[in-house]
Length: 288
Length: 272
Image (cartoon, rainbow over the protein chains, first blue to last red):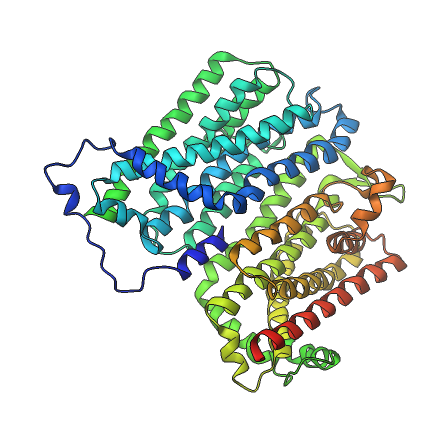
């Protein structure tokens, strides 16, 4: 991701160029906030059609490599020494974890450099605001595009995992939807953060102290109850753990529906709060 | 300085591309520039520690002990920690010599300025590789302290894991630098991940080589990360033999080859 960031930086608008903001959204003819989000969405989709190949490694290949190395390679050790995890073959345990984590990482990857780039480097947001679009349209349109990216990555992984026998139950289809929701829970709140950044230094910190620890400790590779007791509550509040736990119950075919409903409600709350924060931070950065 | 003591002889040992034996100037330049980025760089130390804690403590409970080949079994944390040390040396070296060097080569055009001074292309290659190794040594030393505190080193040979990790850094910095001179765009840099991630996951990092069918084992064994992981792990566990020297030699030769190729490429692309 750093690579594309620097690329964007290299093509950025020359310093000192002033882009008019604010005046347009104050016009009386401004449509209802959010009504034009589709236009921003179509823009991001058009960009993706040109660059999708470059993201194929991180979006599609990396999750499969993790499934292969951990699920099947390390799995031989896990299955030999303990008969899997609570009787579940390790590949079937890890696959839903990697699915939910892929959703999170896709969301995080797409909500950081691209958002700051659209604010500071390539300034697509300024271009959009010069038209009839407002900050709410920008957030919703970009978030919808990120949702498409999450969906593509999750669908691709689910198909291959199913072929490899790492999904035990047809309920994995519902699990796929929950995984997408898990990704969606991370997108808007990170967009809100990214829109306020002046440079990409904090993104390294976000990944190193947020995304990677969640990937490592929130139930992707082993049950959270194997961690020291004091650290477990930290895992429970992460959106990733809520997503992973639900997805795993579904792909293993042992759903506890009330618990899954509660986890999903929690994830939806992250979506809602994230969107409100993103509206605010886009308005603060781009309009006022 | 580290650079002063070894870089010049190494530089003289590579016959073809021109250099003034002044690679240390580039190292000093990077060290000065480094001060502006210290939060990013310091935070890089935490990543392998998180991995060690997650894999060693959490995953260790589901994996159990691992057979290390000579009839001995060790806790999973002791098995995986040396591999994380080697992998993090690889990642740091590759990150430094691909993305960072590419930016200096194509965008900030640092080397055009450098080559306008008495420094030659060989100095650029040796200087960047040296700098990557200096940084890598700092990371590795810190990680080794964490390993010792976590009681996952079982032998006094483990003291040598630090120079071993530096050799891993040398090998990958050399190769990374050479590869960068062939990159045309940032999209090409995505291909680096295509090499690094499979190596990280499949080079007997997380499970022993014997997990693979014999027909596949040699494919794993020829990868540089496998050589690095084996070197560091054998030292950390005290299972040292003559093959250990072979692993070290492989890494040194790869690093020298990479630097040589990188210097030649810089000579051709920037000085002709």
